[in-house]
Length: 252
Figure 1 (cartoon, rainbow, N blue to C red):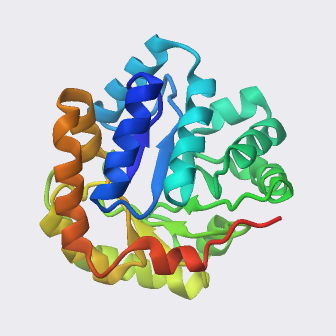
Figure 2: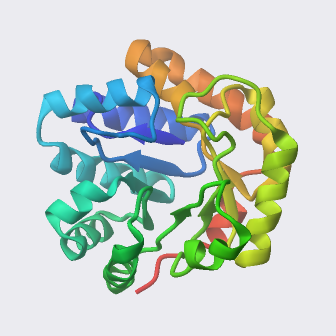
């Protein structure tokens, strides 16, 4: 379950995380707010703007990670700019100390990948990698090099929050290509807008991350978020992140 940090007060955020965990979330992906989240659609962009207006974004994200990690395995989703600005080594250690199992930098520059992977490994973090479906077969070895934890295969080629139909055969082909390129588990998200779509994607991958539908509820009517999360969890059973997490341990 993707949850942007800083959308609510710390007390309310902890309460929402508790309820989402109880509703069936097997893993939390905590989003570090960014001013130019170019891979995200309007719902998550608005959530990030709201978090940024509240201030103390990094500190609030660390606090959210600490609480989420006390409930479920937790990873951080971030863009490269804050990692670069704050320092890869510093940020990796900060989130590792907060209890994160990994950090996924969705737009990790190729020329900085080695430094980031070294920093994360030294801190005891896994480094999941988002891989574009348009990546040619010849480039896949480089795209997955250094990744650990899992590979993230977006279900849609659009931004987060896409609500149209999914090309399930194309996603199946892509996940097969990823499995041939790496032994890592494959996780999918982006565009999985309904429980029915989640159920259709689940057999293709090792885990599914739900983001925008729950973020929309958290932003507009938080009381509805647990029931919505439960509907996705029900559609995904018996596919949960529990088995995948057994292959995604913290190191160090």
